[in-house]
Length: 193
Image 1 (cartoon, rainbow, N blue to C red):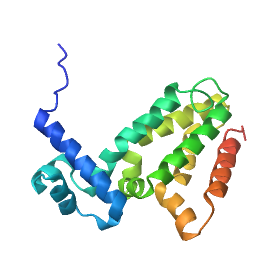
Image 2: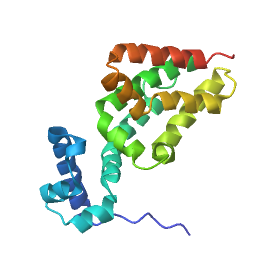
Image 3: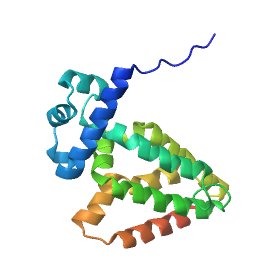
């Protein structure tokens, strides 16, 4: 007989909200790199042990902050209006996904980068990455593209925060140019060659 998932205690939920609120404010005002876990614990008024047990490290905290934002993008992608949502041709949906996901990465660049580079392969092990790959793979397959799995992974590698940060911050490329190039890449990947 299945059992319901355990519910979070009220005090634990309250502490979680306090920690996430404090982290979001500190990251926004001081930058992700300049904030320590000790800073977050002090600002949230919780013990360091509580913080580390709940989030593990700063990358776990970054991932928790990104969860809600990722869920919104996922909702739009799975049930929103076309072309990002269902109802448009696969090549249009893939181009819209690239545009929306790039916007998400850029809006939260330092947090996404931290969550994706916390350990070797961290980006590839998240549930959201698996959803992005699955979505891209399905759209590529629907468009008749060969090697949809490989093409989906290659496209998402180009959208990795570390890569985007390099293009925009280190090379100084204009974001609209990066966006246009990645959308063109997505369209090329849908072709059956």
